[in-house]
Length: 560
Image (tube, rainbow, N blue to C red; front, side):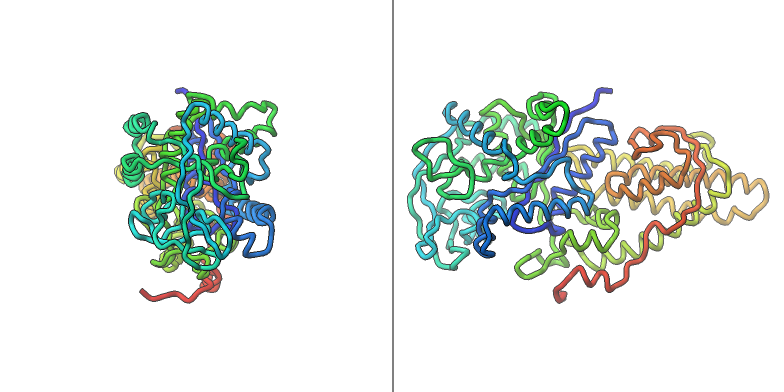
């Protein structure tokens, strides 16, 4: 079977703050789990993201803190990298765009190609301006209501409906610095003409099977005949390579592909083959799977495919996997109100495998979901530290009294056949949920819970056979072997979500001769192996005191 090649990206976070669970439960966890699964299949995988240093939000943070944009972006890109490492979600490479010497070159190269191909158009458009602050106000500096759905929105993409806000159309726009109403001035801006590529994009969507809301939004945007801005009049950013637009910069949203490409070039610079990045960006065999928040649907689902098709040098997204917003106890995450759980806190205080598992169970895929503290406590202390821990410790303790078990598909008992049938059903769900077009962390995590629960029920049912006569003793050992077999399956399927738990089970099963020094491969599910189980020296999961949970939420919980 030929191996596949995947370029996997997580939408770049803005380098103006650290990462909270909303960021982590979305693109980063999805991209990480998908990458790990593809590597279990022995596919060729490169997982990339970067800190977006050129966003207006970085400039705003710099002004608010009396620092330079470079100081702000450098500090927070470094902080985000540390948080991703703590959460075990760190991509293969995670630089800041300002640290990438190739970023400016690639941004300008794509612009020049599109300009020469006649894909760009100079327009006179209304632009928000604050007379009080003497500032042209784009995304971070303008706040009002979306002219599509009426929700609160900045002057870029609406977080609620995902539609881009065309120039000057944000309703009741106010300056985020001084809170005064904004005037509009007519300015020249260069746009990528999506209208010209509408037919090509429609054909592109016909071959895709994305999440329903993402597909619907992309088609609505094409029907609205919205073009995408390439330039803006500002200081922070990469210069437009035209002599008559020296006071303009290239729009940071336009720069997304250049960010990914230059991050890959930078990644390859440390390899013996410096051109290795081209295997992912200039090969027809590559599948680019982009993980993004729903508000990035336009950029990754319409804008980037359109302009990369037009340039015809680099690959463009094959699958865009979106996620909705993630709240806390039925309230939106708000850093200004300190209503947030920071990744640097939760992954330091609580076992990262446990946090990752809960985030998967509650992942905001097709609808907004919540991190519910009480449910999280129950998973940690009841399901894992109590039920799972009791089963795992007892099973391995009993199994360690025997020399070895040959795990194969032969000589099943009636009860083990019933167990395997249920496990096979869950395995089918898990395999389907790890395909790009049907990817689901939620359903995967629920299937894992299902396997564990069935295993626990089976184990509890066979314990009464332990002290009976020799005939029943043989039956007991046979059932014990089947329960160990299911435990091994659990260890394999949890590898992408709970990697440390999986490694610990693998080590305790002993003599698992396939890939002995490495993580499990998916093919290990089919292997016959001889194991010599060991008694656990410590719990797999420990109960977390209420005082630790209290440290996560520095706000007074609101009763709904």
